[in-house]
Length: 301
Image (cartoon, rainbow, N blue to C red; front, side):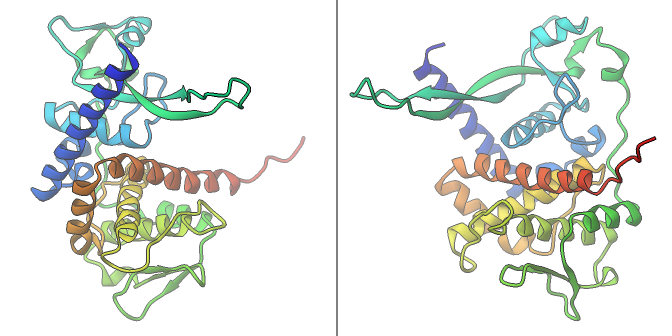
């Protein structure tokens, strides 16, 4: 496939992803809250067991919802064969992941330093539900995401992030950038522990955007496109993080009030969805890395 055709196909697939995402959100169900995703039990996985990231998570979730796939693993035809599997006769690829591709900028001066720009190449993948003969680990029944998460491990997770969380006497939840503090009401002010941890995760994603961490632009006020973009990042980041921890995400306190602003931003510029998902994965990854830093070092014998 030529570069131009590749980019045209990539644009078509991205446009479909954005349209499907908006349609599902407007129908009242975020992709990460769909029963199919709950049954699948977590983030979509590569053939090697690693989690997909960024926009590929949304791409695979949307395909799983559309076609009822409840296996977490997705792989190419060749990867399935390398594992001893065979795509079932008559099955077609129902999803494309996007692989980064660096393209060289054509310059008039042959002595100029090489410059590159990034594009994405679509790659067809199959869900493990479509493949026969895979090893048992790919066919095991998944453990559903939990609606009522245990508090102790989640409290430990957020504590290990090293954030400063301050208790609010009101029902307000927010991250204050100038003091680098997260403000949360007590757990008993929330309708469920699930809602509490979804909101706590949301505010921690904002926290990762501080200049001395991942350095994202917050935006100045509600209605500001940059503000809506950051809120979408926080909502996706909360979903990615909790799903990765085996917890079923739910709406955060800010979900309803920001929903239309997210959707309008995506209608104006569909590329924002993939960009937001990329930032969301980086935020979740940052907090996961903090957990490893908190692990005790084994003493030398």
